[in-house]
Length: 182
Image (cartoon, rainbow, N blue to C red):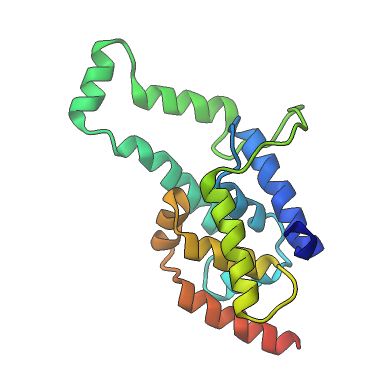
């Protein structure tokens, strides 16, 4: 499938690996693909997001909020139980972000390939399906964006919901951008 990826789409996959490494993740998640998309401001995917009012920083901030909202899924009883055994969950999160940064950049991390999670693979598969549906013989950044929107997994789903972005809405803008660029 990677042979059908444009150079920009391949760069997104490499960037996703970099983001996963920076977060010390054991798998490349769909959110890492989304973060990788944000690294190329001139890509068709980014042009579409900007047209819809969501620039790279807006999306990064939303990803940060949605990633850290997992802490919010702990109720008061959970937080109290952790405190009872000496764990301050909020302090742990603050220290992690202080040490690594919310979207920390890699610093001398290994170049070893990190495998894709089920959600990451699903996003790539859905990108291929988007390309086929549009009768394209390539997979570009626009297809990756549409695949992420269709996959709607975890942090990515919550991010798109927060930004009020829907698959149909983004697909319409993608088609318009494609018409304009010929």
